[in-house]
Amino acid sequence: MPPRIDDTVRAAILADIQAGELSRNAIARRHGVSSSTITLIAREAGHANAFDRSKTTQATRAREVDAAAVRADLTARRLTLAVTLHDVAAREISKMREPTTYWDWGGKDHDYDETTRPEPHAQDRRAMMGTAAQAIDRSLKLVPPTEGTADESRSLIGDLMAGLAQDYAQRHGHRPPGDEHGGD
Image 1 (cartoon, rainbow, N blue to C red):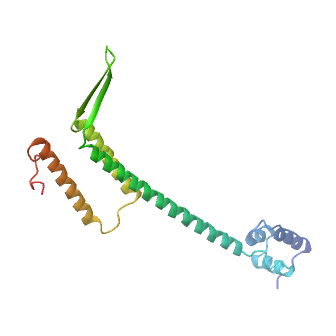
Image 2 (cartoon, rainbow, N blue to C red):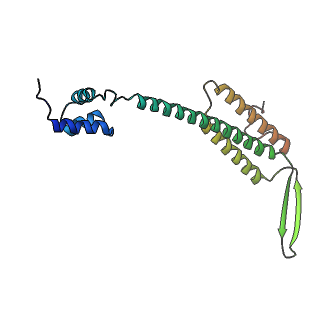
Image 3 (cartoon, rainbow, N blue to C red):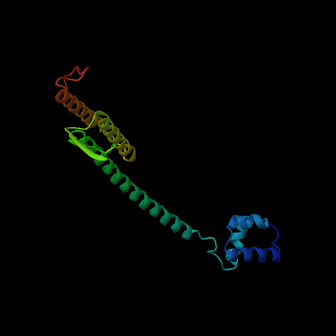
């Protein structure tokens, strides 16, 4: 049987236990005794629950629940933002086929000129496609497609390519170069 712990060491251990600032193992290291000795001294002094971690466990569970709620909120926000980005892309693509008004203000007479074209200039359409592509790319990064959507994606891309080929044919009177499938 190990020798009895000195009363001054025992009092210092009890003071640390009552302070509640250190863990059982930290108190044991500080005083050079085993952690089971610290538990025994705490029990003998009526502090059996001094190292009860149920509050810590409850707090940890509460933090996990809070973190799950935050993750769910962020997921919902990402989904909303992805839908908004898809709407932006759709709006930009639809503007490519709409009449566009161009204006100019200035010159030596400081006059205002305005002209409406049946569709935007090529560089404007290119910018609209770039905006649409970036919006779709960002939305897919926010909410990646799930498994099983590959066929749907191929179908969507095929439909998009056919629509672009048809649009090209309407504007230029012939199929785009390299369109072996005839846009069908």
